[in-house]
Length: 186
Length: 280
Image (tube, rainbow over all chains, first blue to last red; front, top):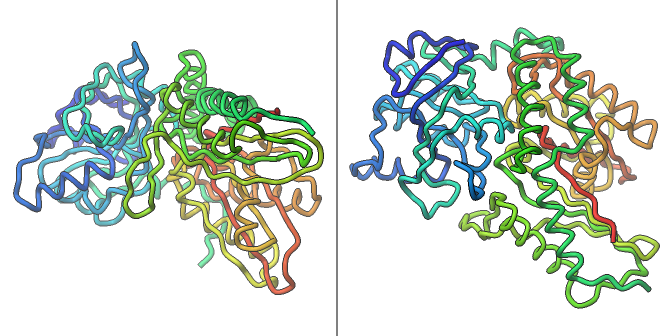
């Protein structure tokens, strides 16, 4: 088990390998499809972003509304592949980590090697459990997007798995190859 | 003729939406616990443990199992001797969803048009299928369906010659392509026969069955057993981390079809297989 605290440095990233179990603590920012579209639009216009992404981690999540007395509603990962087209531009801004679930495309996997960053997965559907590892939550941009607004979360020991490391390895593909009993059909 | 008041329908639908999103059905929870005994991959076992823990936390704290509280699918069985009074049936259902999603702190995930993507802010409208049946009952099955698993669902009309082997290839291709995306372990609903649309509705009905209960038709039940084995042999495993449990169950529903066609639809359901029945 690797304990990591944000913001992440190159040396943190270099020490991570596909399949490693990680407990992440510190600040992470939430963003889904709509927030990604706005962030990359700002970059294309040459405008400043509402957050400095240097060394930061983005969590792909759109939580349920917060009940009175809660810090945040249920907050599990959404499918990462939907933001693949935006991701390389954010990595170029210094983004070091992303938390989601599901496959990334080759362009993202290559960009992780170029920019020395990592893609981590949280357990899809474990949203009530994951919410308990979130110790603070504050909306910092795009409040009009509702559950898709950018939130600044502070997490404590968020349980994650390294899927794509900065060496080009992919835990999903390696796991499939190891556990597949069927004959792959062409 | 029995009169059923629209306000009772609204009240029941509201409660059912909240309960469905907070409480994982016992059959699904038991199936996840059973999967722990079969899973050989350490990473897969960790995931199954987390999912069981998650269901317990959601129940104890009365919070949604998953942040994606879904699009509400509603299967209506309306007795031909039942009469809905003081309002329209569909309006009553949508009002129940509106109230349930607001008061239950559930996420609103519906946009008013597939292209302009403006959120309706109340999780309506539902997708409703209605059957008229004998008797004077009104039965509603409320199933909030998550988007991540729905995005991995497919339908296609094959020539009859592909047979059971062709269906199997289609299911395996679909499960492999989906990989980790639909939050395995999944429940695979397979609709065969009818038309393209009928097969799709059958595949939705299939995911509502009690997990692992064999189909009523022996041919379908045999296909289910074959498919479950094949799907689990893919090694996708819990969360796609590799392992023996990719699916908790494969359910097949069939219907007669045209001599020229073999329609097949596959609905992928994540492990948050939420549904709640209402009898009025």
